[in-house]
Image (tube, rainbow, N blue to C red; front, side):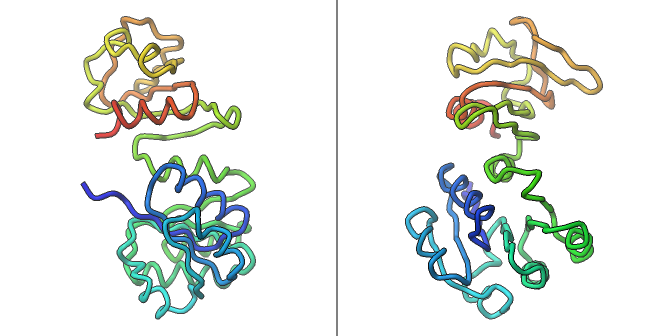
Length: 221
């Protein structure tokens, strides 16, 4: 299966944090900004970092942006540039576009032109958003500290029919399932004998590195 490729447009504090978090996950990231100093700062972090005006369709075409699976527009200093960039990305057929909104008006316009996901940096952490972008199984991500989190993960078919004790999750991965959401029901502090079903939402707590190992080994399909 082809690994997903991401592009981050706008390398301010928010876009930079997304770029860094995606890169730390080991995925391909193209970093783009009009400011050469910002681009240079991420040259050794992103897979590729380029100076470019993304309100110019020719620039985006030259970068092969339509071949990227997911583009994050994190332009913060110009609503006009953000909107125009998003519009061009839609017209070029980029499969998924996440855009940083500066205010409610900006969000309404982004909705109208077809942004797939709109985020507000005041409410969403770059690390949390990057994590959700990468994994189709992760529904929510709450950072407890720099190294520990609580994550909601959708149980894959691989987990279906296995009990918590069968999977030996705590011993093998160092994480704990603190609750299971099943439809309208929620099982708090599930017993070790609890059988996991495909589609259950597992609420797990642990170190980020351990949660990532669990996702890659047992959750991703």
